[in-house]
Image 1 (cartoon, rainbow, N blue to C red):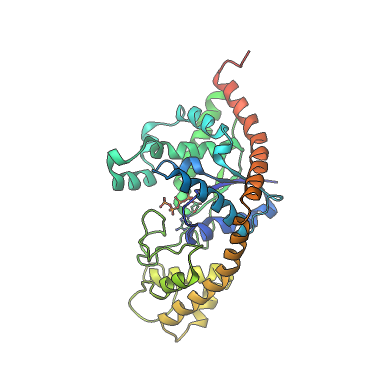
Image 2: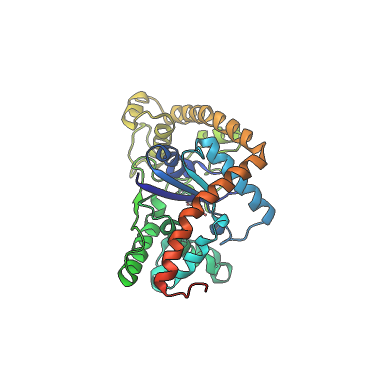
Length: 332
Ligand code: AQP
């Protein structure tokens, strides 16, 4: 079976709809067809300031949501990144195989550091993509299921892997991105020119999965749409309406063309109201399952410990190979 690896940051409160539709939804399907590794990437989370207690809570919440979304620890390897020390160990080695200019070209870093200023930007944020490369390469992943926003980071991972292999001999599988055509990028409900994002979206532009469905319903109903009245998929001319159609389609499995027919002759308001209902119906069982998992933190911790064991079995082998190739003296 081909191997996939992907990660998601623990976020206080919950995941947002972009995380779910762009990433988590794929993961649930992939555990059936692939040898799948999924990490809650808490090491990545501390590249911006975190409250320690909130981070711990967010990590368990992330696990509960992933299980609530349908991940099954019997069918995939679900673990917390900091439980597997090989991630940071490999990241350090890869720092030596990544050009400064190469890392400085990452648009996510450029955007975030521009917003936070040089003093507000951590070195961790700069080397974030190198740690991400380590996450992927440790497991010899063939494919990396992500949203469109991560394409550049996967390219960097491929370049670093190929460079290491060329210099020191075949060591890493060179992974390919696996990006859904549908819902690769979910946009902010208030500003459909930018992606829905936990750090950049306004509170009304982002839909949090664990929020009260009433609050999310309001956000759908007040989503920014476009001039004109016709409900039609046209990402250039009608980015707001197109975003709503994509979300509707992803949540129901009804094709966008069919949705256009369904809403023919009806106004934008009808689409927004129906989408609010569709979301409420979809999210209720997800929230209930997640709440159920959260009731038993000891069980969550047990599941994560088993996941870490499975992950480490693979990670230690890759790291040992890398250390040998680099020329580190083995412990005598
Ligand atoms: N708007 C989105 N549409 C589709 N996919 C998305 N992803 C994130 N936003 C969207 C995908 O979610 C996965 C988890 O990513 P992460 O935990 O690294 O979070 P992120 O990408 O950093 O999410 P945010 O909200 O965009 O955070 P900030 O604002 O901090 O950058 C990834 O596969 C990602 O593609």
